[in-house]
Amino acid sequence: MKIVRAALPPLIPFVAITASIEFLVRAGVIRGFLLPAPSAVFLAIWNNWDELAQAMLATSASALIGFVLSTLAGIAVAVLLSSSRWVQRAFYPYAVFFQTVPIIAIAPLLVIWFGYGMKTVIASAFVVSIFPVIANTLTGILSTDPALRDLFQLYGASPAVTLFKLRFPAALPQILTGLRVASGLAVIGAIVGEFIGGGGLGSVVDVARTQQRIDKVFAAVLLASLLGLALFGLINLISALTLRRWHASEQA
Image (cartoon, rainbow, N blue to C red; front, side, top):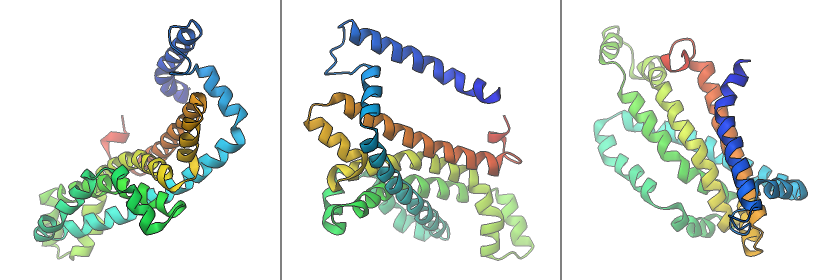
C-alpha cells in the first residue's frame, strides 16, 4: 500500500501527458514525424525488442562500470583534497575545469586514446560523472562538526581513524547526493560515448535518426531514461538502508 501511495503522484501526470500526446497526434494537431504517438513508441519497442534489449544491456554495462569507477576515483580524490588546504587550492580547480569541458568536444579524443567500442563509452561515462562525486564528498568531509573533530583530537585519534570513524560517516549523506547526480550523468555520458564509439542505445538512436525512424529514436531514448531511473533508484535504496536509522533525510 505504501508503494502504491508513493507511485501514484508521479503516475497521474505521466498518464495524463501520454494520453494527451496520443490524442493530439491522432487528431493531427501534432505531426507524427515530429513527435510520435506513445502507442507508436511502445509498438517500436515491441517490434525491435531483441535489438533494443541487446543495446540496452551494452549501455547498462558501460554506464555502470563508468559510474563505479567515478565513485571510487571521486571519493579517493576528495579524500586527498581534504587532507590539506594547499592540495585543495592547487588541484581542485582542475577538477572544475574538467567539469566545464563539454563531453561531446572531447569524445573524439577518447576514440583516439581508447579506440572504438566499450572502452571509449566507459571513459565517457567516467569523465561526465566523476565531478559530482568529488564535489559532494569534499563538501561533506569538510563540513564535519568542528566540536567532534576537536573531541577526536583530544582523545589522540590518528588522521586515518578520524577520517574513517568520523569525517567519512558524517559526509555520507552528501556523498550519496553526489552519487544520485552522477548516476544520471553516467548514462548520459555512455550515450554520448556510443554516438562516437558505437554500440548500445546511442548507436541505435544515431542509426534510427538517419533512417527517419522517429518512433525508434524515442523508444531508445525511453529505455535510456528507464536505465537512468533504475540506477537512481539503486542509490536511493542504498541511501535508505544506510541512513534511515540516524539521518533525518531518510526518517520522514
